[in-house]
Figure (cartoon, rainbow, N blue to C red):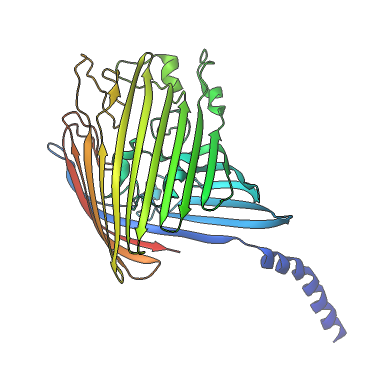
Length: 398
């Protein structure tokens, strides 16, 4: 009997630290899965087909916090893409390829480093004005933000989208202030470590991102503004020489303002305006304005309808024959002015089974001007042509 009591005491002593650790742990598992079946018409002379895809908003994450005392907390988050459509089998992603960072937070705010949405992007997303994602059937990234790919290194050295302004930036330092009566400011910048990968003689290039954002959110009103600057975001082209018609990067900038207002908790109106500017070559530049209007109507019970109209205007500036991703140059190589804007419409009906699970039907369409280069997300570019698609999707959060 005495031996049994001793054994129990030893096991209890050894297990106590593990038990205490488990009780103090704040690690949380979270995420969402969104799968979409859609049919797309890419326009005259191109394909019509159906597809199953993850519209880019599926993820799984782990996060936790440790209280350090004196009002200071240490925290971490690791978030990864959740390829529910099976794309991960042929195109495996990197573990932690979404918002992933470690930081310290307290009364001073939140200071952290890693891979994270830029301050410019947060000033947009946190406002909650835009009821549609950037990808999928109703992806407004077809026009806004110049087709962001989400994760992006500086320039093309890391394989990111050098021209996009809606980024989850690697190798970044971030600061988010406390909220003062609903007002918050944010700042982020990236390291320029890709400079070491440039070819010999490219020492003058220094790829770096600077990003600022601010939001005011108070009850039904939300306002956000942001500014971002990219330096040397295609340095490889500068080194080897730029072929005619190729964007070679310089100092590119973007600014935006967003707003939304909720009426009676059942109807929301939102709006955005952005201006993108690119130094496309020595002595050549282009700028492009775009704006959008958004509506979200919680009709009754589980039913809701969302709608959007987005207009990308023709580019200004003096660039001749140099397009920047979806933005057509203001002049052809022969110096002839051209109209390269587009309109986009999006409509979605949603039925909520619960707070975590819903199904929706959606429709999206892009109408290009004569030289418009815009396209539905992941479709083939079809200059001057229109594209449309519809889809059904199942969403689940956990």
